[in-house]
Image (cartoon, rainbow, N blue to C red):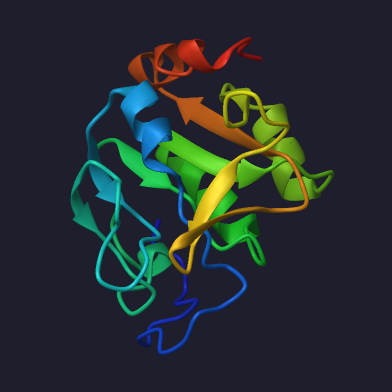
Length: 158
């Protein structure tokens, strides 16, 4: 099912949602993705993917195929979470939050693991050429057997 357009225009400035997943996460996952559904302008800096959708493409309004990577805008993750659950094949990086949308993940067949840089409490994202930590914990969430197995190097999978 294709969602209504959420964005559909090019991103012209940096927003509070512009935190990019560090390369070591993808090195550890050791997966190739068919599609990054919420990529920054100009494409993903580290995501090993064959195709990507930017804000202008509006990943929620496009067909998803194969194994997807999703690090969506944390300011409005609900529709992304719903679509991820519907698609059922991929890995997502999402804030651990007590919300109805996150609880739907928790109660699904998806598996998750806390994501943190080695030796740190949280994950250092790439932002404006520097590494920055956000104020809440994040989790890697996977659906599909191969994707779930790729979470094991990160620790205990729930």
